[in-house]
Length: 430
Image (cartoon, rainbow, N blue to C red; front, side, top):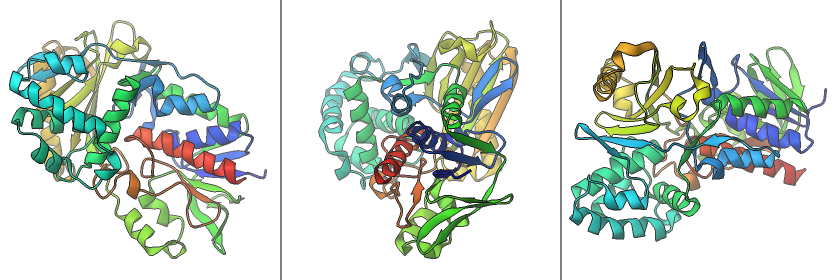
């Protein structure tokens, strides 16, 4: 069969681009080397009755966000639920997580003096142009514009770490932070969760592709064939697949395993090879019974954000039981040192049991993971949106999609948005 487009990588970017193209009439083939689609967005029945995502996979901006827009583009509606009971564990007690203007003005974590300083700081975040601050570290901006240590803590440890999945404020991009804060305020939306987990997303995208193409798992691409600066197809262990349009839908750091570096400008090669991901620790818990009514919560020491997913969407856990997913963004000094990572993981677990006294005695199963890649590109001053690769490359017919590309948002948002951008490039050029 002749393919209009071959996509290497069956993560959310590859599937999203593929679904849009297939819907628009392109014969589309997706190749995924693993036995399950989804990549870092994979979602499946981990234990009987438990649909578990790969870490916390909230959808920023809920039904106004990137995933919802991809589904709108293919004529579908993605069912998304939004958390309501969101808490912060602060000084050994619980308070509301202050992410709305109303809660920021009433939260007990701020003094009156903090609140007086908060207004001007928020005004700057909402009115300054993000593109003028991509190269400014959050640490530097906070030191120059915020006096209160309490507000600095909130800005860095709560707001920035939560929105950008960032561990090091000395390199995290202020422009990326401004961009997200402004979008959240403009839409009036927070985060949401796909009903049925990301499995729902992956299944529907796969079905859309298979209506006008094919998704093959367990197939490893060994080479993207390029002749005279034009794409000619993809070589796998099994066959040579001809196509004049190929999407590399995987971290751009790995592109040169399939296409020789000499085919690209030197600066593109160096920039792409040196992209650094964000890292972290993820823990999933299945509880025999409900141990909390919260929907989500945060804690800054040890740092974690967590979701009782089954409190928001009961379909992801057996009746009467409960699913909790905890995530902690971490620096390389922790994740690259196994003993340090295990120690931090244990510290997080101990804190969970302290926060929820009924949890420890009701653990049915637990899945801890030390992740050496969370988001493909950490949103630093050297990896901000303006510096990441665009969808089109200098090779005719070769396109890029994924969370290491130029796309709005953070993490999964970038994957969905870059996929949409990539698909539109191909549609307009055909």
